[in-house]
Length: 217
Image (tube, rainbow, N blue to C red):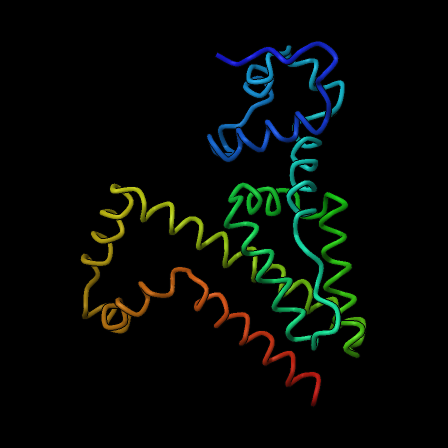
C-alpha cells in the first residue's frame, strides 16, 4: 500500500521521480495522474499545484532525463563529437525506454531538448557547415537516433515476450520463398540487424560519412 507523503514535503522533484518510476514500471501508456497521486498518497489535485496538466508533467520528466545527457566532448574532431552525442542519446533511451515515447509524442517541447540541440548544432556550425546544412543534419541525426532506438526497444520487447517471439518466427516461416526470395534468403542476416551497438554504429557511420563527403565537395 502506498505510503502517504508527509505534509508539506510534496514538491516537483518528488513528483517527477515518482512519475518516472511509474512510467518505467508500468509503461507510459498505462500512466495516469490518478495512479501517480495514489502512489504519492495525495489527492490528484495536489499534483496540479505543481503541474498544470499531464503534458506539463511529461515535459518535466523528459527534461529531467535529457538533463542527464552529457555534452559533446570538447577538443574532439566533429565526427567524434557527433558520435558521442548520438550514442549518448541512444544509451539514455535504452536505459529509460519511456524517453523515446516522450520525445516522439511532444518533439518541440522541453528546454533540455533545446539544450541538446544547441550542443549538436554548435558542433556542426563550428565545423564550418552552413546554416541549412547544420540544421538539416541535426534533424537527420536526431530522427535517426529516435527511430533506430525506438525500433530496437520494440523489437527487444517482442523478443522477450514468448508470444511475440513465436509470432515473429511464425511470420518469417510463413513467407513464400517464391514471392519473397531475397527476404527468405537473408533472414538470418536481417535477424542480426534488429539492434545492438554494431547495427546502430553502422547506420551512424553511414550518415557521418555522407556528411563528411558533403563537407569536402
